[in-house]
Length: 344
Image (cartoon, rainbow, N blue to C red; front, side):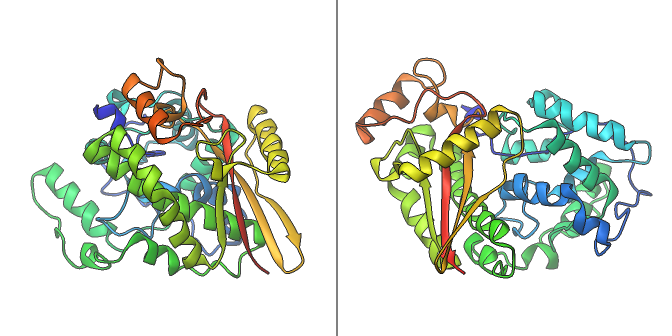
């Protein structure tokens, strides 16, 4: 069952040589440089990685290691950018516990499920990580030094001191709400609303799977997904919906316009391209659409019966959702879209 508990730990791995990092500088280039702002990898990292690896998540509420941990563990003085990019590409194609380098993260979060990203996307993210200073949580330095001290047997870390304790009682919803997205362009704003909601759902779903198993996770989705989504809609003062051409719950059935966007996103994904939000303005409202794609974890409940969906899960699905259409998927298929609406 352990493999079922795997989180979306995008980039907790990298098949690089691990050598001493005491003299390494990880800042490379300053974050206020215009080239950082313009670097496509920064935005791609925020879109594809921060759902699970957000630098604003506190130590106890996180669902994956922060991206700075990846950088500090797997780039040393002998690692070239080409090697770093190649290592990431190789891992994405075949994530597995044997090749994972961050053993503590694997024990806590599990190995990422296999999912597909365009090679250009991974290359841009890795290039940005290698070249520039990236944001880190306030608790990270204490945590990293503690882990390094344990590794050396010297106990140099500060434990759960000042850095880790700050924000410990804050909920993930409150952390997300602290970020003001209203000044962003409409596409980015809608995408942030979708991704922060996805993070809340993912955190709670993964916690349920880890503690109680896949069957209880189905109950969670049935009972809690709507309330959690609605809570994030209140936080963002927006309407947040997930709709599909093959809905599990008929309340999530896509309308004619949404079916058109789903078709468009399916073509983008099939062509191995990075999807961009679709923005539609109507009167004083903005509508932003973004795809929901499958990975190996999704297939436990959305894959093929008797292949990736076991009999117990299928029986419970039939009980909870008599009109279920949301099965038969493979990895990297568009299962539906986010539909985000907010005021101009």
